[in-house]
Length: 254
Image 1 (cartoon, rainbow, N blue to C red):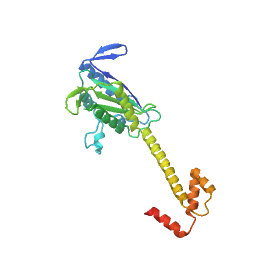
Image 2: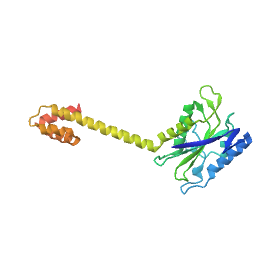
Image 3: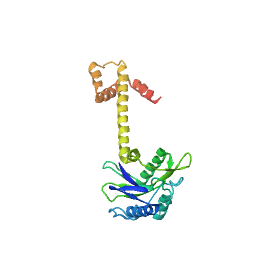
Image 4: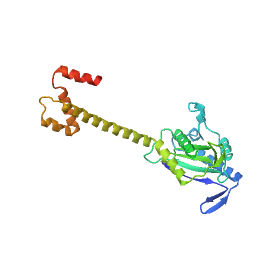
């Protein structure tokens, strides 16, 4: 997952030059950015509705169908500009999938990433995002206000983004992608296979310890591979009186 961005502050470097931005100019820049990410040329599978602004769900709104409705640009603009910081007005950044990363529900993924980021910073944050699928790599444009509330004290604090914060966003988004889920499933599958092999070893060892007539050294040699364990266990299970087999099968039921 790729995460990169920049910020708009009272003194902001653009290229090789520093520029001064007052709140009015910063607001106009943010309004233009919202228009850009909402109306930029859309891909074949995108629609006007798919480009709407979204943000965190309010508590209890997880199952509310109207909670994901499009947020008006003016509402998002006013919300961000009412949470600007002393050092930074707002941050603009992008989360983008790598080739091996697939995301089933992009909005849910972004909400979970930003929720985890709030916990990491111990702050209540104000943010808005738009999903884009018009390029080879699916991505999300996110605007984060320059200040947030401390969860413990309720005081307003500046939100400053360092390299470690972008690293946290990258790693969290990667963990929430289908790529990571697929690798977890593969890991669990390998663990199950290893456990099954271990169970077969224990079963075969238990069967061989029984002093059964007719068992020779060749049969014991078959225990060195998985197929050998299967053959010897199956063959020994069919040896001896039927009553003995029934008793042994009953042991597994107890």
